[in-house]
Amino acid sequence: MQRLSVIDGGATVIQWPGSTGERVLQSRAGTAERANRFYEQQVLDHLNARMWEFVSRQEMMFVSTADSRGECDSSFRAGPPGFVQVFDRYRLAWPEYRGNGVMASLGNIIENPNVGLLFLDFFRDVVGLHVNGRAEVVEHEAMLDAYPDLPPDPVPGRRPEWWVSVQVEEAYIHCSKHLPRLLKLPRDRAWGTDDVRPRRADFFGVRATRRPSGG
Image (cartoon, rainbow, N blue to C red; front, top):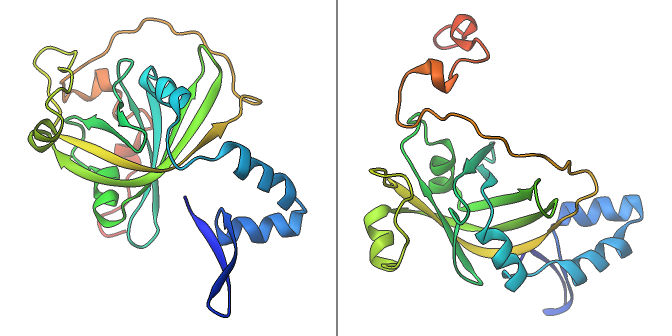
């Protein structure tokens, strides 16, 4: 959990969760007392039992990363319920499969291990969970050595290339106030193809409007 310590004569006088920037804006907006209640009542440095159960049945999450210069990226991950494995209160991981080869999220993690995960349940509880922590990229074989009881991949013949293992530092609710309730519908999926048509890889027409080389 991030904390701001106020030091006086070598002794820590007070310690608050949250970043320096949060505190500056809370002071300007007059929300410090409300923010303190949230920190004290809703922010943990681990997953409690209900958070653990919530993560274990989610089918999607959003991943935020940044490189060593602070340039950010956000991405989406999805899979069957439980595709994010929770090993204990302080450790979770998810598999990474063959994709477009860019590896933007994994590349950022190599430079900067800080990650922010957002799990949103649009279908049952209509609520979300933030999980922030420090991540590392682990090869599949090394993950199996560390956790030999990992369940097999549900898609026949598919196997992860990598895993992202996260040490939990913060976990807190994303309230349901503005979350829509959605309905899941079946759809066809084009697994394991490089054909851009079923993957809709150029949906936004970038190939026709791409920048000149070096631009």
